[in-house]
Length: 364
Image 1 (tube, rainbow, N blue to C red):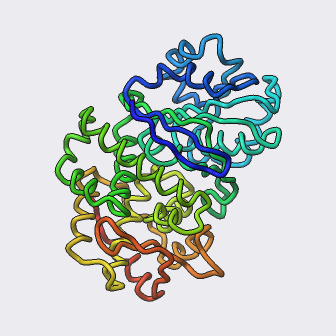
Image 2 (image 1 turned 90 degrees about the vertical axis):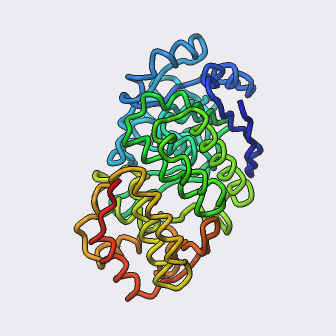
């Protein structure tokens, strides 16, 4: 087991990362010195595969289990309200502790619930998808979507503990597993050229979920996310690098009503678009762009680019949280391992890049 620490304004918390660590969850939660009741919060889909195991681990420790729909389309304020009402009915008070077990949607919703319920209760994350283990469960970002855009209502609310166990990924469907690999590729581009080269060499092993390969990729990604959010919890500077590909990705998700792409798939297309925009803006070499796009294609065939016009996509981007005074800002690559934040693209070049992506096809 590897223990990685994250600094936040409310104190330092730990990420326990390793195979089999989930078996220690109840003991680790008890070690937090809690005083109130523990409530498990998950989704029917996750609970079908892991419920019996988690019930056994937390036997005699938790008071109730609350389940909600974990589709991206259900990541909204209605789900937050219903979850809070279930907590009231289950007897949760301001000393309660939530244990969120699931992927990014479960973590984002449960985190936002924890931030607001009784003006703030403690939360522990046990991420069960690759995207959540390497990205969304770390750093305290919580939130839900509005029809106008992704994650527009939320809060920064760090966990008390994160437990990332690669063994929980054994039953993860292949498409969801691949979705997480795209986020790992992102870490290679934004700050870890060694990780990127590792992925180029070991992609087939990673796709087979080879334990040593997967463990290295997860731990390397977790360590980078922990470093960045420790230095910039509130996204005032450095943390913006984590948004590489996301301005495009959030627009793709929004115009398709969150029903076409897994988040990582949208990020993959977003990285392709950002790579092309970097080349067109004379910031990024065509050679490195080719390496990135080829690596993304090796992961698997992506759902095609949507039929939305460039104007429609740009309008969706305008609703993104990273927009400043109506001006779009992008994170663009300078080389593998280094990106630049806050880049304002020429509108004509941006439109041409979107047209180019629409005619592209990424196949393994």
